[in-house]
Structures are given as C-alpha cells and as structure tokens.
Length: 379
Image 1: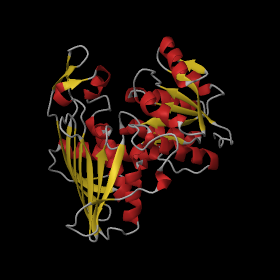
Image 2: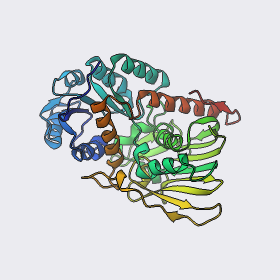
Image 3: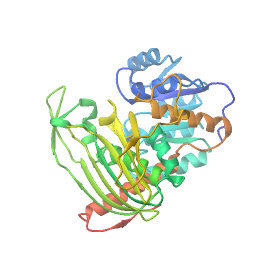
Image 4: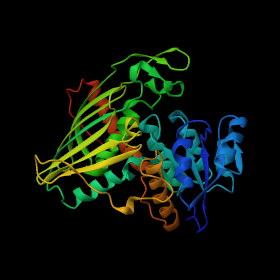
C-alpha cells in the first residue's frame, strides 16, 4: 500500500506534458503552481525533444519518454495522466504497478470494462486514485449542492440542462481534436461533454435512476483547420435525455457540440420553494461545464425573478482566479492533497468514474433502441 505522503511537498510526474498545447499546460500546470502542497518533479512525453522542452517549461528536474520509468522514479509520489483516452489503461497501469498514487483525466478509459479493471487494480494497489471530474469543484455547483441538500428549494421537482460546446462550429476542427470525432476513441461528445455534464448534475441532485435517450450525428464531415483535410465523424454530436432522479424529480438534458452562437451550459433546478440556475460565463463557457467560471442564480419562489447568489470566500484559492481554466482542477488537487496527508478519500476516485461510464452505457442502450426503451442505470 502506498504510504500517506509526509508533510513535505507532494512530488508530481505528469504524463502528456506537451509544453505547447493541451490540457496539462492549460490547466494542470497553473493549478499545481497555485498550490504550495505540490511540486512538479517529472514530465513525460512521447519524444525526447518534447520531454526536455516540457521539463524546462514545467520546471521539472526529470524528463522521460517511458511512462514506467517516470512512475518508478523515487522523486515521484503522484502520477498524473493527461493523454488520449486510448493510452489510459497502459499509463495508469504503469503508475499502479509502481505503487504510486494516480490522477487520471476523464474519461477513465474507452470502455466500461476497461474502467472496471482499472478501478479493481487501483483498489488492489492500495493507492489514492483520482478521476478528473473537476466540475464538482466549481464553486457555483458546490454551493448549489449545499443549498439544495439544506432544503433551500424545498422538494426538488425538476431539472433542465442545456449544454452546448463550440467545438466543431462551422465545420472546422483543430488537428489535435480530430481524433475525438471517431466513435471508437472514447473522447467524443457523449463521453466528454456528456460525462462531465451528467456527473455535475448527479453531484448536485443525486443519481439518475432511469432514462430514455436519443443520440445523433448532425454533421458527418469536418475540415481540419490547419490542413484542409476532411475527417468523417462516426460518434454522435447530439444527446437528448429524459430521466428520473433518485428523489423522483424529472430531468431533461440536451448536450451538443458545434454550437456557433452563445455556446455554454445552463442548469436550472426547480423546487417547491424556489429555483436555482447555474450558468456558464466568461471565455471558458463554450468549452464545457468543467472549464471556466459558473454563476449561481436564485429565485425565491416559483415564477420569481432570478438574482445572483454571492459565493462564499471559502471557495477561493490564492494564486489562481475563478475564471481560469485550471481553477476547478486546482480545487480538486487541493482536496487530493488533504487526502494524501490524512489518509481520507474525499476526491472522486476510479469507482466514481466507473459509475459515470455505466451511465453512458445506459444512454447507449436506450439510444440503440431509438429512445423508445426506458433503461435503468446500473449503480
């Protein structure tokens, strides 16, 4: 079993630390730099020259092209996996084999079976394992969860979600994102936008018990922005879901990509004693509910006007603003640091990731039946 980390800095090795672009440099690097509990000691990429460049950019002492060597290095306590989903099984497996704590970006894997195997391996390894469902740490979502749990809306009757991302708007796709159009890649609209959005809904309102869903491909071909090449889309870019929440409330969800006008997310929750709305704002809004800043609005009675709800200062972090892409990631890392010091397990783990994968499977089963069949969600 990996030991609780002693009261020194938690030493991090990042796999997928591209110094020029990607989620590691956009979110993980600023998140970790904002937290005094961590230091980046190692980076790994697929090529020696990019690994060396990443080490300079991230301020790391060690650069690797071999994930196993990075994970085994004595200067690494926590391995962070920020690469394509297809490589998650191999790289997370290397971290677990080395007995290291591991943070893996969402989705955990391409299939639920792979996710279940990773979760079982992580439990056997006795390490802390975290899945990157960072929308849970958005202050507006966290505060809404508290208000609802405290009875602030009375009995929740319904929730409606409209989540639209700008990816693919106008038929253009950046080269680095073209692989996400492949339905077998495990990183498409359903998995990424759908997974993050639906996990946020369940975190605030409780689990989805049953659903009927329809998915569709509204645009079958995209043009790669840098080259003009044509890419065929085989994964859905639209999801429409009607569901029942654990407390009996009705849920309606639309998730879509390629929205060219005012892309963003709005989650409205109506109760017997008022309503809440969680609304994306700022430049991160078109990227998804897990990225950028969210506003919390409240109406004190059904039919009343919404007003802004101030968010408590306890949700702030020194060194990084709420509008930063990496802010929610930083709050997740702060929770993980507490877990690693105390032995607690408060951060979302691979088991939480498996539950979201099973929810996506339920959506696929209903969609395969044309949405005509209501499907129970496996816990």
